[in-house]
Image 1: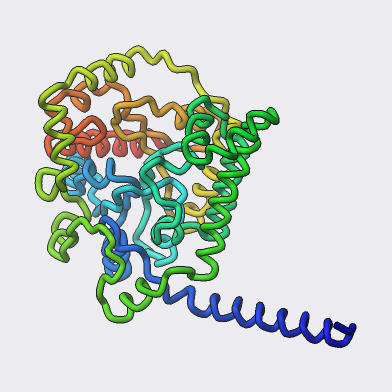
Image 2 (image 1 turned 90 degrees about the vertical axis):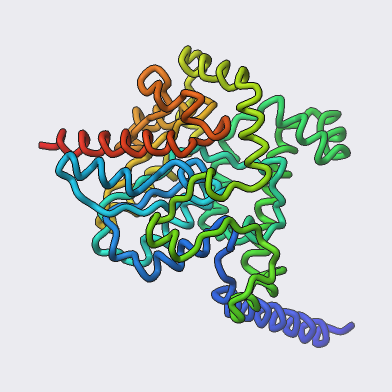
Length: 379
């Protein structure tokens, strides 16, 4: 092959690559938000009704099942602080995805919005065992900005013994070679980085998103996504909150039955929370710049950000460290059984990690009182 032919081939390849990139960029806006657990339904509702709310609470299923806007509003009104609130909790959401949702919420430019409550979770770059890194929802949130945050977190996340065991289960050959070479930790980080970057590439190229795009155009679900029913009536009257008691799936019901049959493990975890024996993490491992950027984005939208630690079965100590370091300006830590024992009774729990309807009522009222006290403390 002569020099002229080589140049021509390279030019054609470059043009093909450019054409592919431009086509992918043109298709990307057609990829709809995932329908999983009511995420897209809540965004559609917010698109039409954002101007009706003063406060929005973003988080995981722990928020979706725990924050009752009606009870919250009623308690705040008793303290002379009337407002309207919306529950933007979504099942299975990860902190990186929550940041993407936050940007979408703020992009609607809700002029009335004054408060953003945000579930305080550690920025863990690991893929949970049950999570498929090729799933459409995982790929969707791997935008360049969110992938950058994941890689920042990965660079500072401590390497734990369980990480070595997980690598041996998921990548046995890589783990054996890396261990023999004395490079198990770098191999773990490189493997995780590779999977996140692969998801980013699929995001940028809209790989595998044909059914989602076609379904969006036809207003049908062609992806087989798991949905938790969120009807327009529930969104209008419950403002995004639905207790487990009303639409739990079979797996949720099984967790509830296990807790009722044997609460000993849960009670042990509560005692451990009361003891507060866990060592506080190093702030340098928590990617404080991501939390600071989150606060800056909310302030730029004319609202105030409050991080909330929701009552759980495990210690959530990262928020306290970040608050002391100044990366979090306002923190409501409700994961303290000695301070709020009513949020840790068996009656307050649907399962070990989620509040029941009764627990949600108590949690929402407590959160309202904390916000009222926060407002009253201002000069």
